[in-house]
Length: 165
Image (cartoon, rainbow, N blue to C red; front, side):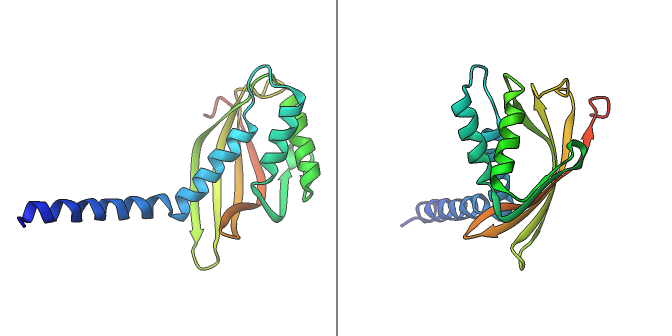
């Protein structure tokens, strides 16, 4: 067997292993969870009340047991999944369209403790009450539970005006 015929499969295996490790790395898994959560918050024009309620309930599944969500700017804090879902329904009901996009994120992972801290800036285009041009800076403390990264604590740190973005 010639060297190129042996080398090509070996290189392919190494590339596959590197890709597999990257895909399953904690940072990628957390970012995919945030992406999936944003998809549940997203709202398309014409979405009905049942879909709104279902997506709000689905969004709460990204939170750990127990969890805490705090948004002092809106005088809201809860550790109750039902209250969080109702709040999301209320937020989504005020707009015909919501499109979240991550503008910036920083992530620190504690491998030993299986926890992570993320600071993320998200713009919710189409959001309610004339706040569509603002973004929100959150601190998200993640914890791995049963092999899945979940949010244990979410804190709305600040509302970032469009002029700062």
